Amino acid sequence: MDISVYRSDIQAYIEDIRDRRLSSPADVISHCNKIEAYGREIGESALIGFATFSRAEVYFQLNDMSKFYNEILACMGPMEEVQEWGYLAVANNMLGIMSYTRGDSPIAVDYYIKAIRICKQYHLPDIEWKVHMNLGNLYSNVQAGKEAIMHLREGLTYINQHTESPTYVLDLSAACVGMGKAYIVLGDYESAMQYYTRLERECLPYLLEVGKIPVYAFGAMLFYRREQEESCQQCIKEMVHIIRNQNFPIMEFIDEVVDFLQVLLAKKEYEIYRELSPIIMDLAARTEVRNMQRRLLTLEIQYCQEIGDEMNYEKKAAQFYELSRLQERENNLMISSMITMRLNFYNLVDEHRETLSQREQYQKKSETDPLTGMYNRLKINEFGEEAFRRAIANKVGIGVEILDIDFFKEFNDNYGHQAGDKCIQFIADSILSLRRHPGVFCARYGGDEFVIIYEGRTAQEVFAIAKELKSTIVGAKYEHKFSRSKSGIVTISQGIFWHVPEEGQTMWNYLHEADNLLYKVKRTSRNSIMLGQDFDVEEAEAIHEAGDVFDTEKQMTAVAAPVDDLLNLPDTSI
Image (cartoon, rainbow, N blue to C red; front, side, top):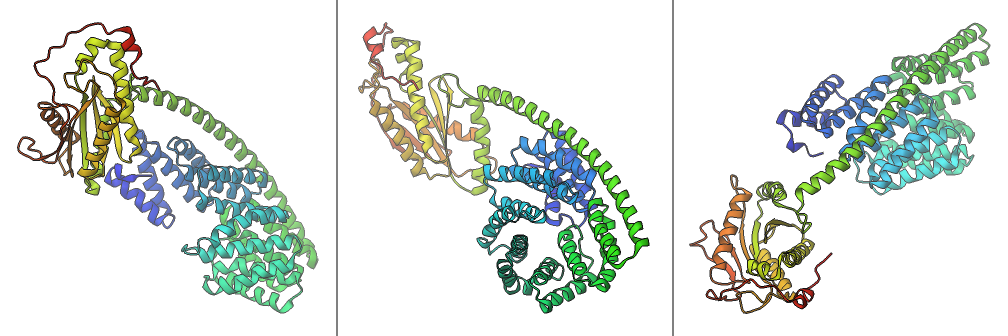
């Protein structure tokens, strides 16, 4: 999104959101509200989409599910309208994460697959690998090891190819843990061990304490399965130290924490479990994510059952029932809300596409010359302003050319208007062929006059392309018996003004100078080119290629062209 076109205060809000992201949620939401209000005021979908997406990110981190869903679904219509496919891919990925966290794995898979499709269609590998990682971890957690490895390997391949990334170690750690856990699901402990070895060598020395949680949880699970008691106890010791001393984000590590607590119960490490469980349960309670609390409560019930604590067993079971009932009600309300919003979103997208299609057709008609298919004078104004802004910003030259067909009145009067239109189409097609050169814009100015704008080229390069056009038209030998020049064919005369634009200069200054140059060169000859580089055309030297001398005394009489002559005109139809 190019923010340079917006007001300075809006630019500042956007930059602040990008820089600070979630360090100050209240400020981000305040900025987003102002950005959205301005976006609606000027009808700018990009701003509305950015504001709603950024608010969704805040609510995602704050675990406010209802507001998150409202904002993330609200951003999709505007983002589709302005074709911000990266935001749409990330939005679907976030919906997948949130759905999985809430216990809706099938819905999560649906969102992840949508995100991957968007990434593949619009070539977004920097987002796609993260979605593959999330989908792989989901498959691993539902014991689908082969599917997990397929997706996790996609992520690992990308990470291995981008070792220069500032998050390389953290990304590599996540991929190796995911691959290792998938191999544990398949019972291939040797392959899983290879990934733990890589984690020890390439990741652990460089990770912060919190970042080590997935590694040690995976290690405890792996070494327990491999019956390597000493290594398992070392991983448990490290995990205990981190959980005791770190206020870590439980939502980010819930799978690893559950895996670790399951190892403690399997090893009957009840004393450690009793110490850590209240800490973890307290962190989960703050999130108000009931599915997370249910997962932990399941372990509490198992613990009470194993130690024979019937009183707490019944108490925990009652809590589990109540949580399940509340979660089911919330899920039903959320799913109903999501279905309604998604239907509204799809209706909005369909309506938008139809409106956009009609608008594009109207816009194309208003900017296009119906005879030649070229842009018309309206588009010259719009494109010229943009071209000048770019040239001034980049301090590069810009050339503006006006050309017309030599003695076109005589051609039209004698061959007829239908043949005249065909001649104009021939010239237009010749000019349009110049678009193979980067930075060349062509339009019909009116009648037999055309405008060409050359961006980012030297005066010599512009003159060379202009000569190329002249040669193309002369080489076609398009018959013009009534021309006052001796060639007897259709030719053009070209006036070009080239300069490096400065502040205050406009497209129309250059167009005026080009018109003066065209008038000057036509006074003495036709089939000619003159390129000037100074605003004082009469005094300045110009690059000039003279063409045909014409007979000023020759009088042309309008006569009906023979049918055979009309039939022999070159075919310029597309």
